[in-house]
Image 1: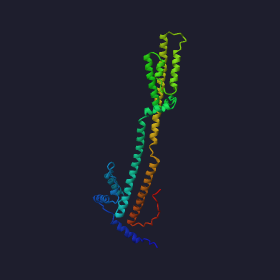
Image 2 (image 1 turned 45 degrees about the vertical axis):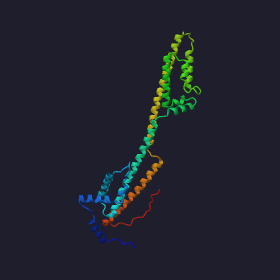
Image 3 (image 1 turned 90 degrees about the vertical axis):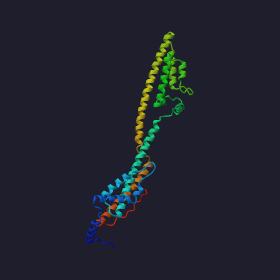
Image 4 (image 1 turned 180 degrees about the vertical axis):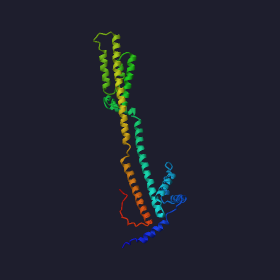
Length: 300
């Protein structure tokens, strides 16, 4: 049968509690909390001291001071519970650091990998495998850059030769080991139109018309490929922003691991806080009902 606490016993407990309030002077409190830190059961083990990662003992001491000043533990039991609270809080901070590190690693690694750009050899092989690659090349910044350069080289050759010729079309035919692509086909059609002489022009005039028509065609192509290249770069920039935003969340496996760790530590911390409050109230002589026993497993 449970015995009830009488008012006389409560009063006696309160008087005894007044005699066990711990050090009262500032110097005494400072020595007291440092002794508690020095002799803490868990505090000596919680700091990571590796070759690369070394957690700050000064930061941990500062954290202990704040908790000790706020919680005022008296006696070994209250000190132990306060030690558990501080240790759990410190480890929770480490979990947040791990989460930040995972996010930074995910964002930086992805951005660095993409910033290298496509391998030109692999790009060329991919384009060759597509049969007529021009349409696919026009959809990428690297493809449009290649086509723009190709048109500029051909324009320089036409300007030097004085006309677009069959030899130049053959020389600047890309992916000649496959069927003629749409760009080569357009150049051949253009050459036929430029060589046609329905107006009976002399050789010099015909050649001049050929050069002017070829340069105008190539200038337009250069402008088109340049515009599409800039559009592709802008699109890639938006996609890169989206990829970086998506990488802000760690992988599902990593996130679950961190969350499980946080939940476990939070349960430990709040359980210690509740127990510390109960012990301190009992020390002050308050009548505390028996605790409700609930078994909470840390295993999810």
